[in-house]
Image: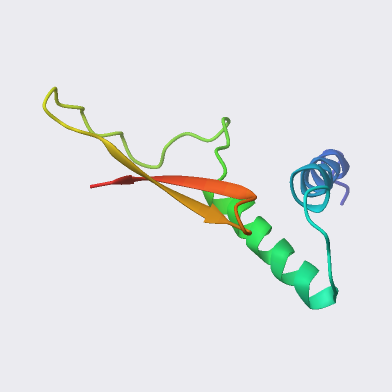
Length: 87
């Protein structure tokens, strides 16, 4: 069975890795690049916003007195920034 869109999806992922990761760091050895790729893969699949995906649950209603706090986390030595809402 052939997947005509698979090549485009793979090229997009490889291009993202090259632009957002490998062009920004100096790779020391194979262990270093494997760790960086693993961290980027986790970021790409879990934390990176994908606009085509819909939320899994409805967003909570925002109250007027609700103060929203956001916590920023750095990944890959500050190359990737992940933001999470703090309750």
